[in-house]
Image 1 (cartoon, rainbow, N blue to C red):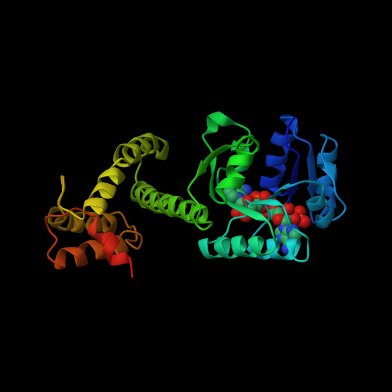
Image 2: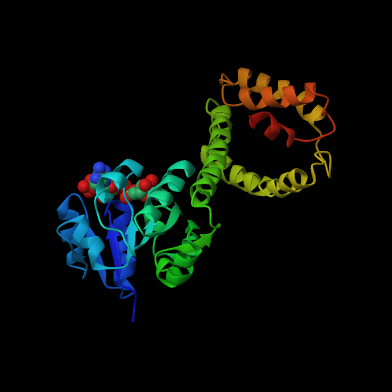
Length: 287
Ligand code: NDP
């Protein structure tokens, strides 16, 4: 028999999650602030609840997928959560997640926080490779592991309720760095007779080829030896930065995305770290 699920929040993400539990045969109670969205799912077999309190009372496993932590507060305040298994998939900061875990425990609920590493079209499509980072109550995670794995993969990152949010933001932050680099790259060819579609596959392959460098970074951070296994030392890399800046200038491209990183590289070099590679930049960021 499939575990019954209550889902609060039927936005783009919530609705995608809901469809997978229904398709897998889980009894599903839903609630959404705007009732029309719940009514739309009723045709697929979901049971719409009149109020959030009624939806929470219906089942033990309560999944929340609302806009932000403030909306979670608005929806759940005053509702009896005693004995509930509360899984919060709403994007939050680590501090918000930890506070929410404490808040839930004080109300007699077990708490698991989730950070969704997928967009709605990836939900229910295992080959798309999406997953959710989970952290918090390991007991809750083990108990509902199969149900949680229905919409998308699961990666549990421990007892600290803040870790799911932290891993989520850590990965997305690196993604923005990658997008920033790609933006500069496309800008460089913008005024030339070069098809962006010709650059794109070269760029994608290069980013993929360079990505494993993060393993060396991790290895250096763990050992504390930032000169370990260095292939392209910092002195050489800093010596190369004028080439990048002059090329940007020649192409009429602002260096504003490159400059902050180059500045950190120069500062690290000035500290006498020319034999290292780029790992020392991390220590300049950590205050
Ligand atoms: P949507 O904007 O599509 O939906 C937001 C949901 O929150 C709706 O159900 C909305 O209700 C509800 N809501 C907003 N404010 C309140 C409130 N004050 N009280 C009650 N309900 C409220 O967002 P998504 O579904 O896309 O996102 C939901 C969560 O999933 C977010 O935390 C988001 O960061 C996360 N996420 C989304 C991804 C995406 O690509 N979409 C990817 C990864 C994570 P109503 O229908 O009444 O407006």
